Length: 344
Ligand code: GTP
Ligand code: MG
Image (cartoon, rainbow, N blue to C red; front, side):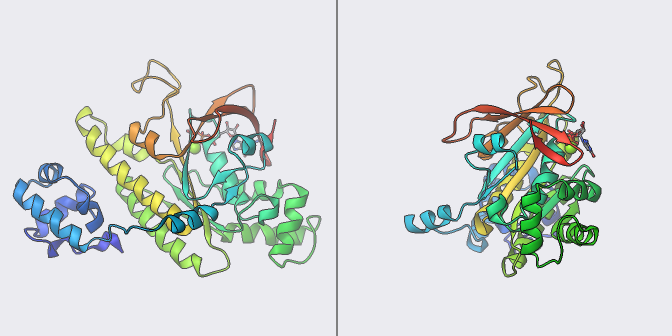
């Protein structure tokens, strides 16, 4: 895997430099191939000439992608799937649902429902397409220890009758949603199809995204390909670890690589990427405008769909679509219930 790239095979890279490179997020030939010699020289404490040689050598080694024809691009786009929230107003906003081969960023203040949404999509993705799913499994990268199997159970049990019947039949289970034995089996099967990993820090999170690509590659051969990868939260570790102004550039560079890795999974395996990002609720807070996601510009540019969540009365939340390509901005209202996300 890319993370195990033998950096010491590059010219001028000994064990100490290799370690510095890794510590700075250059863990693969690919990340070195696209690095600027200047930034590399700085972060690894090496001369610019050596850095240049490293970049050039890494370019030889790296799989930096290839050109493809317009036909290939068209074929790939025709495979784009739409994952339903099972809330019509939100699906309408999104032009049918959360798209595969894209990153969707959900941002909002604490308690606005970001984690609930990632849980719900890990359930919905498993449904047959005729009831809004993508009939695939989920990968869940959990950086805030938020994943709760009990919540998955609530949400499975709370699915609309029609969806329950369809997925029971699809999985070849006996019985109906009224049979407790069937429901227990069904819940267990949903949980089996969610691959969860906890990220302990930002570097670990980056590695897990690379690992997620392995899971996607392995599942692709099976009946249950990965159709959604959720990262909840995308930014928390990065914010906690890179606090000073001087570390901002490094933080963005790492976050950029991470997002790039996620994008790649989306493209290669026709997967929807859903990432969460907390924003400060207090306008005077360090990060300024509460409606601005914290990841900064890079995240803004590369997340194709951005959804802003706002608290409303009680369990209501306002979902706003912000600058999505080819879609009108708009708002919808959802409720967070014991049984999961529901229409207003
Ligand atoms: P941070 O991770 O702190 O930024 O928040 P978040 O945006 O991820 O919020 P989260 O998705 O955890 O939503 C929290 C809200 O969902 C709570 O305020 C509850 O209203 C609701 N919620 C969470 N779990 C349950 C549950 O089991 N039952 C019900 N009815 N509501 C729940
Ligand atoms: Mg959360």
